[in-house]
Image (cartoon, rainbow, N blue to C red; front, side, top):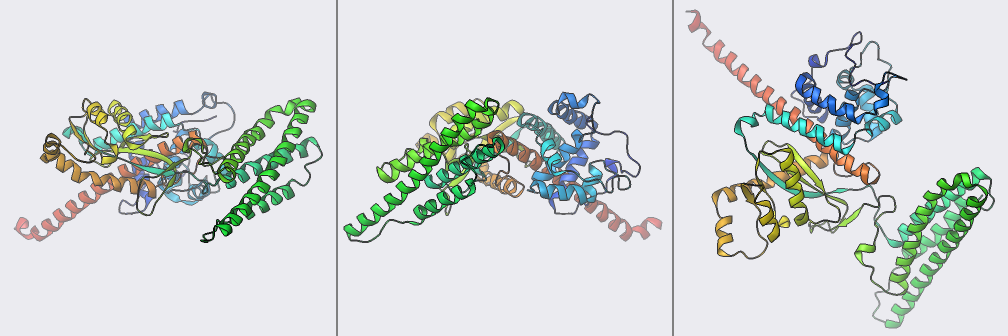
Length: 501
């Protein structure tokens, strides 16, 4: 049984609107809690958020049957805290079990729930219920509410900035022999464990098999080509390297053949376990591809085309991205473009798939304009420039700030020298601050697994950023209000004797 929120307060619990949060704190948690508190206390916004959460939670768990599960509000709060603090699930569990204000925000009572703790797997399973689509919908609600707080509706138009950066995936640096070892290691482990269950002989010492392969992998890994000027020495060294690689490849092939024979035996004698062999076959395909590419590169001296390469057998969506940054020759992850408005909220984002910046611009603006029709202008950097982009983006924006790469003609120089163009271009660098903040609040490296998990993680990070920003805006408004109040009281005390007289 699951509820969106437990309306019946427990004994000793504090109403969420009455939770005292330090608005002067510069830490991530208080600002995020202020944003969450503001969302909850606004009944109209709360109902919209709860309506989306209701769709994200499985319908069966809302029918009032079974054990009590985490409420939709608890899931929402903990998801925001996780990304705001750039926390893994272990850190999130520590926060949810011991942070006083977080527990009050979750609706827990200091009296009744003093000993209550969240299970690690419970946190993983429940936060995983939030899909990318629902997170984007909630994000739109939060941004619209943020605009109300900032009184953006009175000013009307939104003036935006767009840029992209790479969200890293959790992978090691890829080499062809390294990926081959990853693949054969998984093949042997999965096959060995399955054979243990089915009592099939031949795989009792599969740990020793992995060590034997690793030994040859390390030998091939350590060998480097000779830099001698003597051609004979270079050729001799090259032959030693080829022999080491061939020895490594031969051993891997032997174990692949042994695995294939074992899988045929399992399919014949234990047909009920065929589904469990699919995972092994998946890694066999990776191993065979890496054998082929390694042989072609080292033995046949062939250059492997970029589109044939895979940079992780576990995170296959990982891309090799070179953005030309100083000191960063390449990054392993996915390109994420964001669009930020003048109030500091991120309106939308776009995750590239083998796409460069100039291919991202149009779908990002189309998506953002659909969600926020009041977008009036947007600035880009030169990486987004393409002649067709300038033509295709103009119908969506009254002011398009898209500097041209290379030499400009007279008309283009006049366009880019206009006051509004120059003003927007000077303000464009502020988007780098938003990117740095995203990286500090969870979106530097993705902790989720798989492409769907990656997309969900980015959506959750954008939402957490906007909730944190909402809390920061409310906190700043509170500080200004307090400053005005203190200034008024000071003036009143200084002139009090004149009023009394």
